[in-house]
Length: 610
Image 1 (cartoon, rainbow, N blue to C red):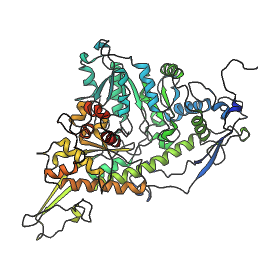
Image 2 (cartoon, rainbow, N blue to C red):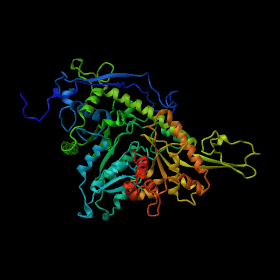
Image 3 (tube, rainbow, N blue to C red):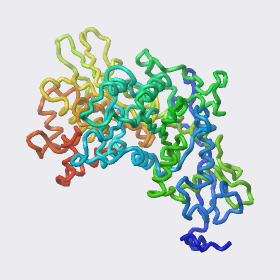
Image 4 (tube, one colour):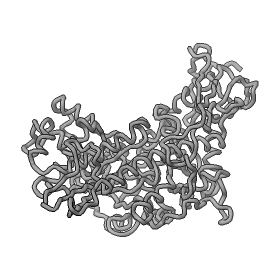
């Protein structure tokens, strides 16, 4: 039949004859053990462990001979207009993988449906489009205003994405795991005591439950069940943003036990606990690595109220702009309608290359070449092995950073018998005398007093790519004469100056409301151990420790003034520089975006690098 109906360009006019790439094999990186109590020699004590360089060439042909449209991977189909569901070969593979391997215990009949998107930010935007009405404070009744439940510290673009609809942001208290179901500030208290003068009672929750950004918390199954119960009672849709699911670190509890003598959470099961256990009536994923991971909210979604966002951003590359949404079919149908009229399917270039890598050609005669050595795709086994290797290297990075910070968190002062204080630091804080207890002489003739001050506290990251550090600013000797906000700002500025040259994200960037930013957000820093080059990770972590030791040794107000000299030239309403206001967050920090160029550069330098 001759097609004179569709407005399609002819595939022979595409300027690409093939798409080719050299790619890794799944075994490139070595995993870390699921049970770290007795790791192998190279299991956790090296920053990165790789096998011999392993590469393979993949090829997307111009025309595949495969007649099955659900398997075909070629330029002719991938670069043509497609359906909003996603490229058929990749969509089909991901749908099966999601229901049978990632989430084999979804409780509702028929399992979940999926739709491909342009990454989790795009997916979340479409969820907002489906579930939020636009609200105008100059036109609409307050009772019609929508609300979004979020963690007390949250991924800022997810919060910012609600601004065009003027959604009411409703923070929920968190602990070391993540969101609280009960207790002060917990979900139940928020819902039971809802103030309708602020708008509708919220019916949508945004949450990052694995490697929570920024706190790195890992929500236990027990806590999930508590939260789900409240959500069922108040009809709350759970949007689970989960880019870090496979980055769960069994060694985090071991680190916590080593340095604190207690686990990160009392809900933490043994490191080798199996969640998908056939002996308990559950289906196994078929992979020990996945069975040992804390499962998604989907595993307890008896009501069909969970929308899960997955992405290739952390497993392949952020520039892919490729991910998928998993939910009950009725919700996916609504998202399909939004996708048809907005982005349509993701990039055909990206989908075909990822499909060739994972799925591969059906047989050698089809003309393509997949990501495995034999020319087939990685398939499920290869993909899971790749995730294991990624987890391994990120876990090693986490251990490196956390151990250095743990060993350097105390500022030590010593005094001799004449009461002369020795601050145990050089001019910059970087010296052979580190200020640890091991540096202090045992001679009673020399020292009679040792004072230890804990400069910061944190928990080893249970998952994800971040470490959330609390600055104990009230332990600083100048905290009674200088505001804590200004002191923390001075520390942050000091870190950016020689010899430290270190950039970390202020906690105010993750404060979903100005009130949280002003009350306590400024007291936190978020470190990312994922992006920095391996040979710089330990060096820059030690630089942070050295900067803190130098900073805690400052005893005069003029020392703080000197650090902030270049940052406080411009005052705003007599209340501090634009840079200082931006650091603290809140409305004023956002309003200064249009001011002088140097302040814009400063804000861009320290901004929401999430």
